[in-house]
Image 1 (cartoon, rainbow, N blue to C red):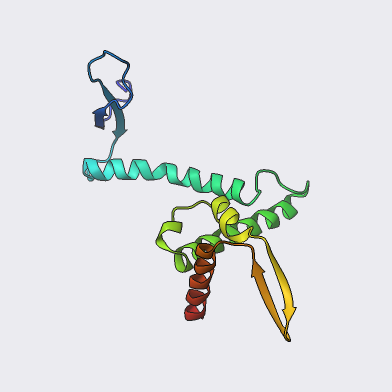
Image 2 (image 1 turned 60 degrees about the vertical axis):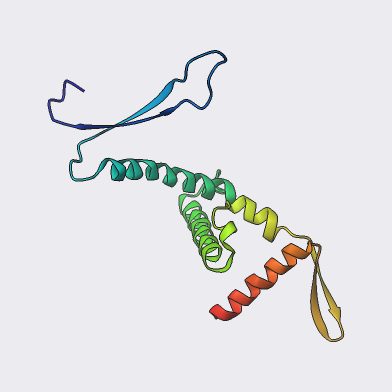
Amino acid sequence: MTKKGEPFRLVIQRWRDPQLPLFQKPDYCYYVIATNRDDRSPEDIIRFHNERGQAENEIKELKIGFGMEQMTSGDYRANGVWFGLGVLTYNLTLTKKLLFLDAGWKTKTVTTLRWHLIETAGRLVRHGRRLVLRLAASWEKFQLYLRIRARLAAFV
């Protein structure tokens, strides 16, 4: 840092170490952020720095949640279409999560949504000139489906 010669600012975070060895005095953990931004407060710099990692988590969620770890073809254009469909599906899933699910579901990952909502066993039965969807779900999950359905109907 001394070779560059330009001024910079250090923002240092300090907190008590939550995992101490037995019979040792309380110790501190430190985290240092070096920046050349003088126009922001230390809180804003820390907030901005912490939000950088969220993009990595979203890429990981896209890749793992929708099976985008490997491309399906050796053709570059086909892979571009495949990945574009995956991104579109990811964005639609996030939109549905934000608009139609309860507040507790907003922080859930795509994999959790799939396990709890989408991958529910069910059967479509024709009964009395009607189609009836029978779900193998608990009463709480059934109530959640009804709330989602009501929100979808109110949105349209």
